[in-house]
Image 1 (spheres, rainbow over the protein chains, first blue to last red):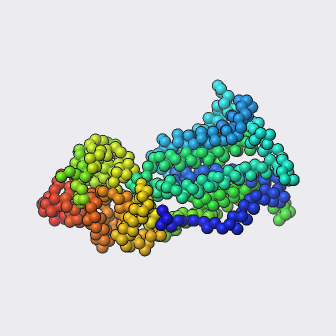
Image 2 (image 1 turned 135 degrees about the vertical axis):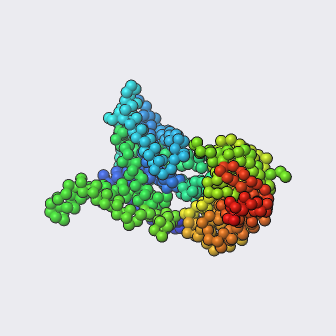
Image 3 (image 1 turned 30 degrees about the vertical axis):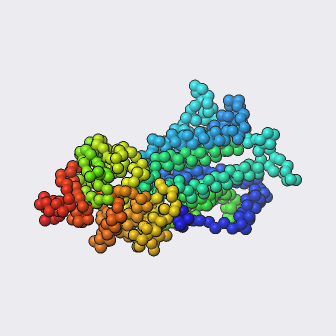
Length: 357
Length: 237
């Protein structure tokens, strides 16, 4: 389809790529030196959210299916990892076996959720998926009896870190004369997987499948009339999104070493959706930006107490309250001033221009 | 005459409401046929049932000797029926050329697709200059033309048109119908659904009159247009 002009086609330049790669490689050290070890940990977490947001972006951004239960797939991936690599069942399988397994199981559940919801759209689909997300969480919360599968609200502890032979990501390692701590190494592993997910997303967007998803989102009847198998493609969107969610879940379990149903509540689904909407739905750079900002901003706002002390000499508002207040204000401001998202795609910018005009 | 499309005893119901009852019609290869009727007579329902968007209660649809009954819409489309849905149904946030290329979604003969694209542009010069524009920004008539062009990109043998004149200015209606006539002159059969009976009977060789979900009259357009009952009910005399 060489005659088709592409929307949002980036013009790669080697210099920019090289600097970006160098920047990403050095980032954990710069952050460690400037802000401290805990921020490197947050960087790891931000990468996990990028993965989640890109996964949900396939469902919501590309295919236009509003999924409010996405966190269920994250939970499934995490629990599969915990079951197969912790003292809970006494199993300690290697990560390279569990991660694909968890991702595949999540993908299967994506199809299971997709099948009964094929005829639903918009609000109705949102309600059903929201219910699905809650069902999974409540199952995890209660499946400690009669057979103790999930250990209930106490969660599963002592989950194995990612480990290859004797090389574990939970311990520092000396390489090339530098000492890499666990969080630094985790950063590189997550970064590698995020790059893979970005690559897959880009390929999907620019494929027959990606174009069919856009067509379904725009007008499902017209899409079917052009010969698109809307049922299979919607299921594929659910499955692909869920697979990324499951992968991120497995990584989360290994990274934290502990999971409980509390980590997989509705708020989490909504946060991931916010990352997409605020960043720029259906647009990979926007989604990445949204995920990073929404992971780091609430953490940065923890320092509001310090800022008050330097500014006024004392604390007027409890930082814990002020933090969520400012976060809320920031979300509202973005939606007011950049309704199509912070970095919207040309298509989506158009959509909002239409709505105004 | 062996029909390209033959619908027999088709019945469709929404819940308890009978929308189409025992409808039979035929479209010959390369022929223009219209289905006229008032609002709510069941015209769109008939078209949706033929194109697989809704499942009929009973009856059968045959296309070129093959049964289409109960095939999903995308399978019907792959067999050479192209539907232009009511209200145009273009993809508003896709450019003109992206819309046209979606029409060729099921094909992978690149060289032929690019030739057909040139042909569609030749047929629709208004779209040529707007090929990079978003379809949603086109005028109603241009969107209707784009929908026709997209349908043609599938190389259909039968074009199903649902009210192409709806909501268009009279001059634009003329332009759109000129294009439909050109498409038909190229050998594509057309089943046209219209509320504008005058225009439909003038354009098509044969017609069916639909009332309350059932065919009440059929025949050559000239005969229908001369029929006093049709003249009174649909031609405003």
